[in-house]
Image 1 (cartoon, rainbow, N blue to C red):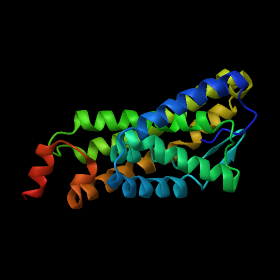
Image 2 (tube, one colour; image 1 turned 90 degrees about the vertical axis):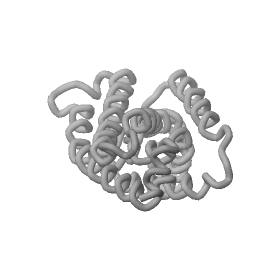
Image 3 (spheres, rainbow, N blue to C red; image 1 turned 120 degrees about the horizontal axis):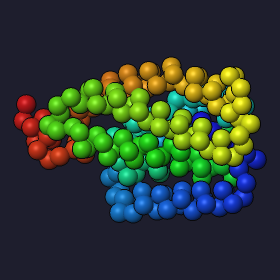
Image 4 (cartoon, rainbow, N blue to C red; image 1 turned 180 degrees about the vertical axis):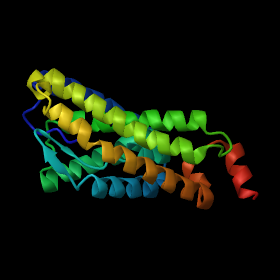
Length: 212
């Protein structure tokens, strides 16, 4: 879901740049040195997964990983997503510099929501796999919906006809929704069993897992 340069007007670019900048500052605030390896690993995973793209009009279809990154990184999600998108833009011309802020916002918001819901819904590891899978799917749906809205607002021509760019993007992401649901469920379940501390859930949950 990379928007290319030339899609947005400068007013939108300015507003989204401010929003992305605020999200990045929020993510960087209070970051500790021991968090860097986990953020770096998530950045590498996001960079690699979302680099494989299928172009559709002014956008593309690719893996998202918003739910997975959100659950693992929480407020640090913006860092991983921004750095991954920046590297793709600089080295592979995927997306664009003027649309880097809006791409960052679109992909980070689902990560934030997934992080919040995961910590609210998961208690002592109960239903962890199911919730992780649902959030993996939800993050893609939320991201695509936001993306479609941005395209529609920028130019209504993208929504015209049965085979419009927006409709094609929505249909093309159905397999991504399913795959990311399965992937997120599998990865989070594995981490919960092997390294529960990486999920940063409640102390009670971590202690319970470690005592087993």
